[in-house]
Length: 463
Image (cartoon, rainbow, N blue to C red; front, side, top):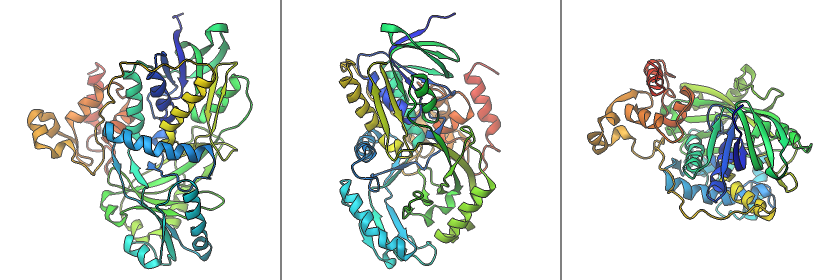
C-alpha cells in the first residue's frame, strides 16, 4: 500500500468554498491538500447556480451569512479585477406584482439598510417598465438594487483552485473520503478511494456530503437535504430583453424565480426549489420546467418566444438552519463549513477568511508565507470585454487565437490549448467546457464536439 499523503490541513470538497479555504490556508506556511471526490474542481453545486454576485441586501440581518456575504462581495469583487474573472455590473430590480408584494418593499429596503447596504430605492410602475420594457403587464412597483452583478462562477472556482495549487496546495481529484480514523498526535487519517491522507487538521467543506463526513467525526448536528433548482438558458438573441437582473419579492417559501442575464450573453430563467432525497439527481423534470414556463409567462412573456439553448439543474445543500454552520472542534482538530446556500459563491473568500480566524483561535499556527506567487490571470469568458478572436494583435502573435473551434461560442484553438495546459487542466469535456465555453452554444457541441474530443485525447497522449 502506498504511503499516505501527509499534510498539516486537508480541505475536503473542491467547490468554490473549499477552493477558497485551500487558497487561504496555502497562503500560510502550512502544507495543504484539497481533497475532491469528483474528477474536477467546481463539478458539483458550484457549477450550476445562478452566478450572481450578491450585495447581501436581503440577508437576515445579524446572521453570519449576512456578514460574510457583505464581506465576500468586496473581496470577490477585488479578486475578480486582479484575476480577470468576468463580472458584469448590471444591477437588479425587485418587481412587485401584487399589493402584498408592493407592501413588502419598504421592509426589504429597511433590511438592506440593516445589512449596511443603502443603495436600494423604491420605484413606481413607470420606472419599472422604463428599465425593463419587456416585462409582462401588471407590475405595481419595484425596488432597485444597483450593486447586484453577474459573474463567471466557473472561472471563480477555477481561479481559487489554481491560486491554491500555485501556493503549494496538493490537489487530489477523484479522492472520495470513505472513512475517518483518529491518528493520535498526527491528527486524522482519511481513507479515500485512491489512498490515504494523514492531516493534523481536517476542514469539511464537502457540500452535499458534509453531514456524512460530519458524522464520521462523531457529530450529529444537521442533515443535508438536496434542493434541486432547474433553469432555462435562452439564446443570446434574447439578451436585449433583459438588461438587468429581474428579482421576485421573496416570500416565506424562498426567493422565487428570477430572470437574469448571464456573463456569457444568454438569459436565464429560474430556479425552481424542490427538496429531494437523491443527492445525485441533477436531471431536469417535466413538472419543474413546466412550472418555470408558467412563471416566466407572467414575468416576461416575450422571453418565451425566444429560442432555448439549454436546460439544466443544480443541487443546493439545504439544512434545517437559516444560517451558515461554521464551527471548529479543537479536540478532534476538525472544522465544519456546512449549510452554505447559493450565497456561498459571493461569500466564499470571506468564509475562508473567517475560518482562518477560528482555526487560529483553536491553536493552529498560521504564519503568512513570505513568497506568495501573484494571483493567476484567468481567461475572460464574458461578453463584455474583447474575446481572443476579436484581438488582431493577439492573433498576429499567435495564429491559434484566430483558429475557430466552436463557432457558437467563438472559442479558438488557442484557448482550448491553454486550458488543456493550465495549472488545473480539465479531466473531461465538461471541465473543458467550464474553462473555455466550448460546446456551450446553441448547437450544444453538434458541430465542434468531434474536434474537441480529439483535442482532449491528444492532450492526454491518446490518438
